Image 1 (cartoon, rainbow, N blue to C red):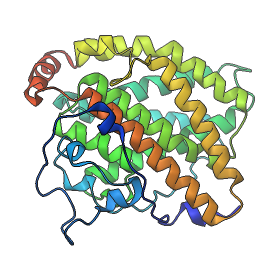
Image 2: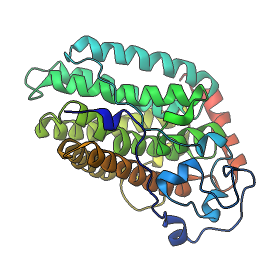
Image 3: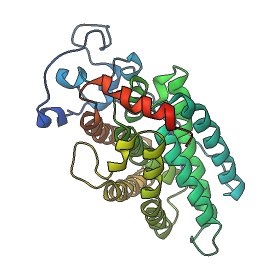
Image 4: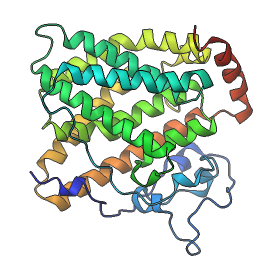
Length: 322
């Protein structure tokens, strides 16, 4: 199977993002955020996700990395043998990242801890005989999936946003600007990782067994409540109420299962694409749809007044190591 389409910049598509109109958000335009090449030109981001309403643009982070051109992130192919050592290596890397983020109450820390705890639980489950149809395939998927996140995280924080997917740009920029509630930081990053990254990880491993995919759904549901309790205790007490997706009435655990089902279908679409051009179209659609979902979460999770983050950050300073 040719992978060229997933290793080069995709064709650009324009699709209207209408969520802001539905939400009836307050007006206002932030200056200097659009690419200044010519009056009325779309930013690099908008060439993929479609025009961003000025009302929405005014509420997004004032970070120029959000708006530049995007070249599709290459899908890694790490840990093809599916060794348990790959999971150990992933957890060690996750731990180093979290240990660097937590003491400074970085808003990226909450998803970092959630992902670490989930992967620790996965390692326990993977060591159970008969838990998966093909544990080595799931181990392979686990590492590819993680490397997609780790790569975009590294590129964003090294000021190399060109290969950072749009929804991840929004998640990282929101965390950097401290604009979102703790729940918003967690749920937006989960949406980015599942809706955007997971289809490419599944494509890379040729999908694996559907039963194994559903087994992970069950695992996530079982561990989510305990991780939310830890996040609330250490970083932001309001996360205790993180049972609904911001901007909706959808329970988070239900949304996770639905997002993973969509990721499965999108992975199948990538795999079934008859040629590189068709696969690039699927890839672009995944990016656009993930952005639209992420945008709705972002707008539903912004602090009404950004200074409200002071309460969260003050609490974190006293409790992050508890």
